[in-house]
Image 1 (spheres, one colour):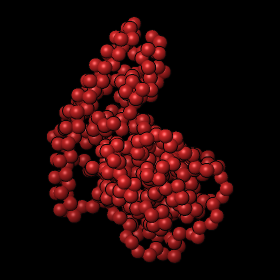
Image 2 (cartoon, rainbow, N blue to C red; image 1 turned 45 degrees about the horizontal axis):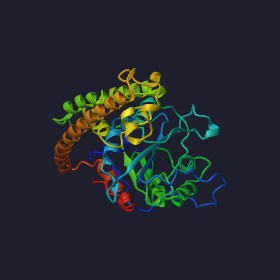
Image 3 (tube, rainbow, N blue to C red; image 1 turned 45 degrees about the vertical axis):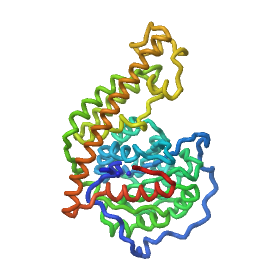
Image 4 (cartoon, rainbow, N blue to C red; image 1 turned 90 degrees about the horizontal axis):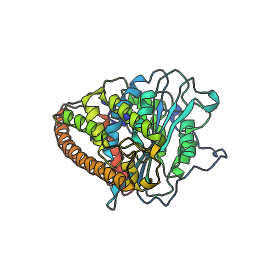
Length: 397
């Protein structure tokens, strides 16, 4: 589906974007009258005991045959989107970023499922999100916007807190009123649970207005956006990019994979580093994400796991340990983990410093672009997200 940001997730910094004009939609684009929602399970919820404020983003991506450009932008812009929330906080407490991913409109997905598939439930494992985006393939099918919004609303573990920021971004290009679920009902259900639905129409604004994308966003009290999904994403090479890429590689050396997930996690990390090499800008943005508190690998890394208290070094068997810790006493294990944690913190601080310089450089370049009249999705998204975050008392800067 923000400081150079793009839904991308790519959705999120796509060039040549325009906000849907606030005008009356044609008769055939007006939201259908809301009907009584069909009986069904209540939306899943998460444990309210989690104290950190949360930002939950569900990305619903059209993967029908015409959406190759959209998926490419999503892949390229994931880390830029993540970085928009690096400083998100409420009352000084840093927010927790969770991302969920759906695809819809692919004919190889069973018709009984509405051509809809959940790829990821809400997760803080950002490498898994990247992995799924790079695994996506497009294929012709029917796009049921109302039904995919309904599934995301009912089946994801949305926070129960009214203070948390809960967003759906749905991207596609077919008429919004297709399928067995009226989008008015789906949007009404999302609103009931504090979820803001934002629409991203891939095509001209007037077509999005005609086909119901603008009406759906208005009904949802969300933002209606329009992008050219086939336009190449422009990347500005910054002086800091090469060093950020190098430090990202050094950061990987501080990870100590343990248990069954350890080897898989380290391999996934390396693969997503490779995938980010689509451009120097993508690599640099990923490095900045890896240096943030949102990059949490406590499910397979001993440094993150020990920091969160989700793993106890003394409880691990020798065959569950990484090579660096095999045959060592508990105290020796703790010493190695502490050393890796220090190395990681030092690298993260260096990356964050360089990223700050990089952002200033890019901001200056953006001013030059803006002066030429270019309109970009990242600006639109940043503005909309700031407004929606402010309503939940979240500060992004």
